[in-house]
Image 1: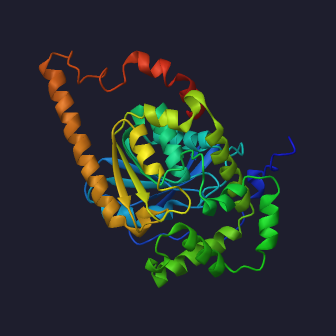
Image 2: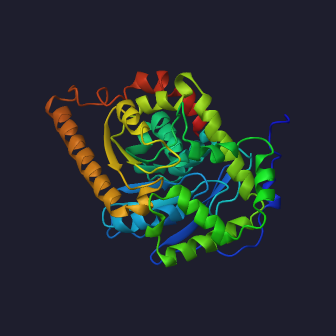
Amino acid sequence: MSSTELPFVPTSNVLPKVAPVRVAEGERLKSVRLPGITLTVRSRPPAREGLPAALFVHGLGGSSQNWSALMELLDADADCEAVDLPGFGDSPPPDDGDYSVTGHARAVIRYLDSSGRGPVHLFGNSLGGAVTTRVAAVRPDLVRTLTLVSPALPELRIQRSAVPTALLALPGMVRLFTRFTTGWTPEQRVKGVLTLCYGEPDRVSPEGFRNAVEEMDRRLQLPYFWDAMARSARGIVNAYTLGGQHGLWRQAERVLAPTLLVYGGRDQLVGFRMAQRAARAFRDARLLTLPNAGHVAMMEYPETVATAFCELMAEAEAETKVRASEYLASGGTASGGAASAGRGPGDRASEGGADSASAGS
């Protein structure tokens, strides 16, 4: 192990007894054991059978609870599930200690492959946005649409307010930070997080604040909490330095799924200026900008995000029907067939092959 690596915390030693994770009314939790990982999945019973499947992936330091408000609004439109990435929420660390963007993408792919729910409407916020971009690029068969809320895609000039989060990736920084914040209460920590992540922190209700404090107190009792944070932060930094076909912007260009991009004008972690670059990078993109939102627009403005997603879903379904009609009318040779969707036999082998091996299960 090099001197720059964090010591790995064995899974067998990091399963303490802590307070149970919060489950909102109408939600369910399940634990799914897969090769090398155990994932906790949060879901809501759909309003009726046969609704399309949706999967939500949170950001750095978040959990599946970040999507509760949006899932409740969408239960008449989609069969919603939100995953706790390994080491976050109620999911224990991965067996191999891999918290890279590729490692998290592999976890999502393994779950989708094992559940048979794909193709899904895939959502990602922040770190989850980078993860789901990679999933959509290397496994287009699993993704029906892609919705990204403040995705953590590479920026040449990060905002000053994002520097402390990036510094978590440096060796020894977690030890220094925990020593510096030893006397901080969960309430103080939550106020700091809300100030950083929300465009308008005052929009958080007293009940929402109490729930966040309760969750913060629970997480701080997990001995692997800071290890997961630091390694995942390092994973983002490392992903930013990758070039070629593994670079996140290159993979964004390869995403075939219709994509909704959501950016907040008061985001202190992902630059608002990146919205236009993202809109140019994704080949079938729609852009929603919310001037007063911060880094977690799906929590601050869930109704607006839900409406935009439903419009995306309707457009995607209409386009699919048109392509299918053209394909059938031409006897299976129309441009609306598999080749025009970018999923001909050669495409998967030439473009997705290397990444499918590294990000797949």
